[in-house]
Image (tube, rainbow, N blue to C red; front, side, top):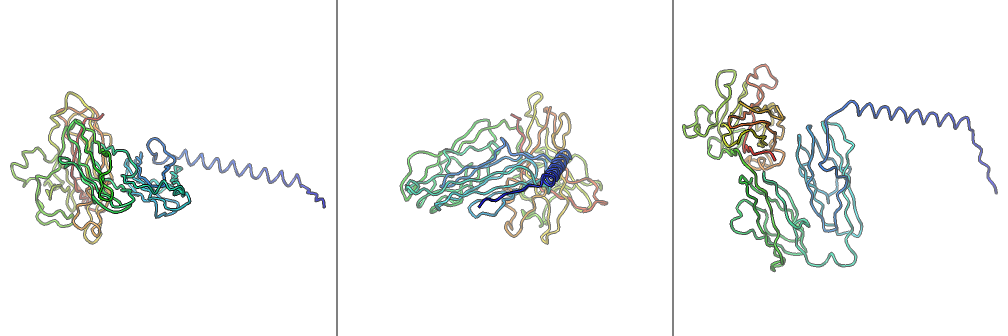
Length: 417
């Protein structure tokens, strides 16, 4: 049977014209949205996919943005882990893909949100299926499938996976006390945390790890390599031992103008007193606190005497905002600047990496998290340059909230490469 199809060309023409108009409006709306601007977001080197073997792997990505960003999978997959899932400004996140024991390949898609707005960027995670030919069943032990681990000069606190077909163990060589791995033994695929201290020398360093599988040493050495840097100043405040390490416990903390003569001789002081005429900077257990109720406060570094001539510097520091035991939160502003020659790249940071007192009751782990570290640069510094940090503002009596207390630690100043 022959079937005839008749077309109403006038009706089709109207429909086509409507589709074209709709497409123009969508295009115009899209262009308008792009032209309205927004906070820049990109992944360094613009990766669009992470391809992983069936054994699994980890990869760290660098975020280039000045806003508050989040990594959001289209679907929450148990075999994909992201740490951290959010950050503020430039930072990194690590994607860990578990071993695939199924005969099917699998994939996931990560999207990104900056300052509450979804971005066009996506990152596809694609993993091969478990081999049906048996090669995946050969005995092995490795660290995320890596041949070596390259660590930045500023150190590392990262989560990785030991991949193994049996009982595994790691042996760290003597003298490599700048490196720690926890746990150092396990069975099958196990998550491990690797901590590497800041290398405050210009020399690079290497630790050769030895792996064991089912009690037998695996041939070869796994190298952890870390570059050196030209350090101008590094301050960990470990010479301060006042009060409590727990942020909301204020008893025993000591104001900076009450520090001992030896402590003040290290060169740390205040740039200006608070609006009430008193410097409200306090010493705690290996870190300092800026500010109190109604008043912000600052701290000023010694002169950067190690600077040769005029140099550009990189400053990294760790900062945590104040939250009471009951969950009431302070303001989050931290201003930075210099006294003397130099120009800072960033004048103010938002410190919103809130402590979790349930997961971290002693307030020790938060200092290790990548989002606790921030950085800026100084252009044109000399040996006369000093750095200062200010929590909020000197007078907060009319502010809401009227508290902007910030905890500060591990200030590192190095020559910008």
